[in-house]
Length: 316
Length: 238
Image (cartoon, rainbow over all chains, first blue to last red):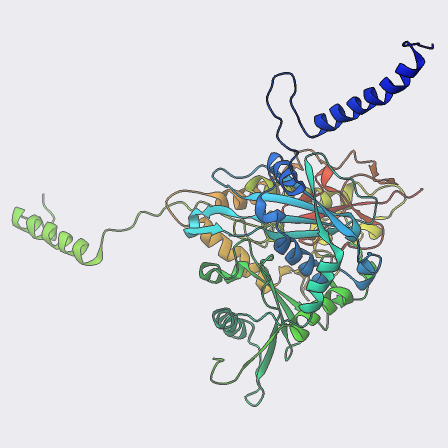
């Protein structure tokens, strides 16, 4: 349908004016200028504010969103779970999406622990975090951590479904790679208190297991150190060819946890409990793979802490 | 007629006796009333006692890595019992019992101890005489958990969880499992057809799987319980 609006010369002068007015009003509305109620609209929120609002709405606390925390999580995965092939495909100029979702499992009465799941499609991992907050009445122990700690890591090479109630966090690949590179040989030392606790555990084990010690040979240990995002510590007992895992729901730096060390410790014999693939022993839960053992030895020997127990002074 | 040997105490004697008794109590203390323990396990030499110890050994208690809740750990115990039962009574089509249990037997103790000390159930095995035994560390932990359970003035989570394991085991030995198998009707995991039911479990670590035809049951089907990941089997043609 064609419209005529009058004299053609006037029309041609009026059209640009009309167009100009349209552009002006459109620009004004984008800037939030006066709507009918006369109030000014707030400018659109910046991305970090929008992220904070989105995260708050699904219960993802600020500590999870911080770059330093996410770097520590990825660093832990990098050292303990990922291969170079998991990283090789990443473009340094890209970002990694980390989808965070609050989980709400049914807990015991009085338990105020929090659970968060992180899904990282680019790395094919799903990480479960827990911030403990409960009491063990029988032991009169408070189990409370300051940080969310990793409690489980699962691999998922399928197309990862992102679930409702998740919020997307991102970290830049380049700054992340710089972070892990700069920390590559950072030795994570255990504290003297932890070392003393470990020695006490082994003193007891020596007696219980009647382990034979040579008076001329010191017992050599390598400890993996404590990550701020994990309640797990591994030990390579070189002279006895064993791996020892200390893990707990309580922060391992808490003195109270070491008083209940029977709850903490798993021993693995390198001579009898290592296979290349679990397909050699389908259905059994008694073995570690060469891959797992390799990662433990890397964290214990290359970037861990060596300490020695000298017989006979320190072993009864 | 009197008995010449009978001694009849006087009032004075009775007073002396009472005084002596009071002195004895003051020095030695009144005899303690023996309190019932909050948690008890059957003898480890019985099927129910041995089975209960396995169930306790395989799940986390409060303070231990992987602990979520009492309900979650107890659910883990039930799921483990279903795995053991399934390895005997629900071997799926396309598989033999040897494939799923590393043994051929209808005895649950054989299924638990299959493969030796580092076998299907780490730390549970038969010794040289054929007796069902467990590794020292298993006994230490169970003993320690029992000691915690029987502390204090009232039963708590530790005692309830231990008693749950023992009751589950006793009931199983007597009459089977009352509770349903949550994985019985599982047919698909992702795009993969599965047999349903769980036939394996691994503690703690979702990064590794038991190998072979075992496939991890994902979280959407409650595949993680009591600090363990449960595994079904890929469907095989008969």
